Image (cartoon, rainbow, N blue to C red; front, side):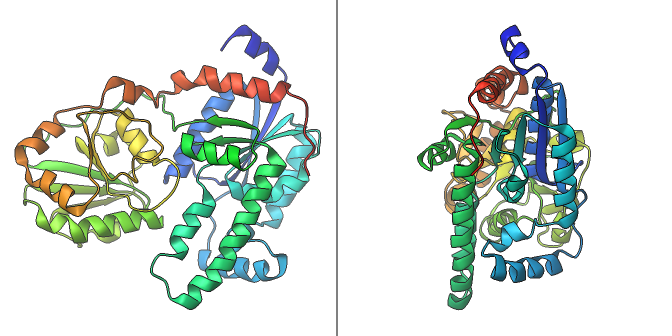
Length: 386
């Protein structure tokens, strides 16, 4: 960071409002938030964070039902109402009053529910993990009965209105990919930064497996529906058609429930130590078909030097050129052809992504540009929160 940037940010106080505390990084959003906080703490000397849910919410189905009930009266999307927590309103209000931040960062669109607590002279920044409207639209149209699609269509329109209002109110936003940043600019966001997932630990080598089999790895929180769809599709359309010496390791919260799904699948459940996760296999697979934003686990796999087999959807938002360690397979037939080709598959297992592709996710590379963006944001004339 340049001396000019350090001086511009000296004395600036930062408040981050995030949605759910997850210190173990059980999902991609938590991993991205941890990287974001690490960057912010390297730029600002005084950073405070408040979570809407200070711990993982319990009785989730009851909370969802209550959110839909409140939405019927508030006119907001139920997805937003799910994050209306009285205790959070009190804590965030107190943090604003006590900390007197010069910049408030709303981490996830849903936290913009608390934007009215922020005074008009305080700068604000939205961190948009996904295009929530696009993501929800995929779920609405995902083979549901017509009556349910109609009901969820209302939810989608309300979510779209909230997202549009959040862009207008905040005016500044961080996006995970260039294409979503372009959409944000079209929607009226003034100051935009594209921040890929970033990591600063030493990349982890894959362990040598001398059992004669080819080991694949899938990592994902199995409470997140795009991950469930991806794994279901891979098991049903691909895994049964590949040789017996191809083994799939599945890691992530809820993955233990998949233990008996296929004899070539080994379910590990949630694994806390990242060295145990990323050292498990030399090839990472991402058979993702749904979702928005950048796939955090794909980014982390590339950073760690894992060879990658992925769908075009899993690679969206990543500006990767040709790379012999990255196989882009759009159809089940392409996946099966590759996994049946023993020589090609073993060669892939011995390869690593190009260094320039791994470096895209090195935290030290992005820090100077991000610090410059924050300096410009904090030094620009204020904008009233409408």
